[in-house]
Length: 367
Image (cartoon, rainbow, N blue to C red; front, top):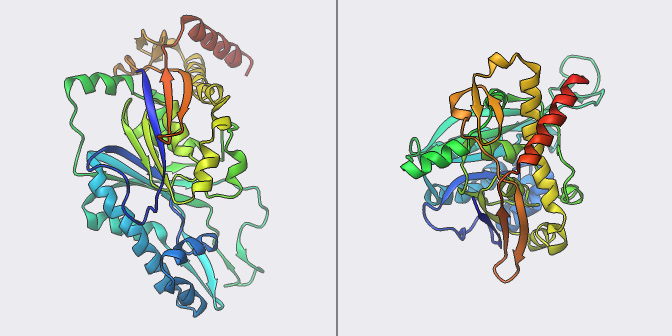
């Protein structure tokens, strides 16, 4: 694993995407949610009838027209994704009061229907439940029957695959083994309910941009990239916004293509000062991942971990984890002319592993 490339391109994701046919292994994205008021202007700029429909109380028609725009993107994804590749769509449903008529607009079910019609395999999805400390979590008022509505405290991570399982050459099988996840990660991530994703685990340079975007926490693309791709794969985000998917791809040795119609947001996300100091933030994610694994090892009887990963000098639970490895980022540079960020990687050093193992044991003993 030597380097990855991360392009950032200004383009309308409802129009032609600048990607070659069957060139992408994984799509991870969070589109503007139809019928969420903050995104009305985006959809209306492509279909000027949408605003009028909402103003005239015809919410169901506005909802459908918004999704027809998204359908144009989904249709292109089927052409762009390689056979056996995945698309992971993070989306929330919407509630809205239109001319004193309150109702739910089920974005997730409409997107599932669209992907199914295109020929994608619809796979079990994840409900991402967002913890909240709000004392009045219901919508509406009062304690009388019919006076309040159930709150929406979750979003959906929809998962689709194009035409069956991916085929691997002998060389790719080794890369796949290097890209394995830890046993305890598998147990948490492949659950259909995520309750532990509460925001950005690491303080990133994009925190200030989140306030004016619909950015999802890096933990979501972080997990999905490790679950559904391998080293060297190409990850596409057609609604890249603040570049969260790109950051996760950089961290875990995947290439990425990041597309957004907002050039100002792209420039802010991928500007040169932003790249400085980013290396240590992203490397810390991998350090935390290794440290968390060792804390899990220290919490259990060593006989529970039957195998040894010689690359990481760590016990592991299963035979499939024996070749799992991690590549720290060596350097991050930018090619302004090509609108591209280049990330170079190196091997983990013995002293780095020794420090991780030592600190993990210390943390475990003190808790």
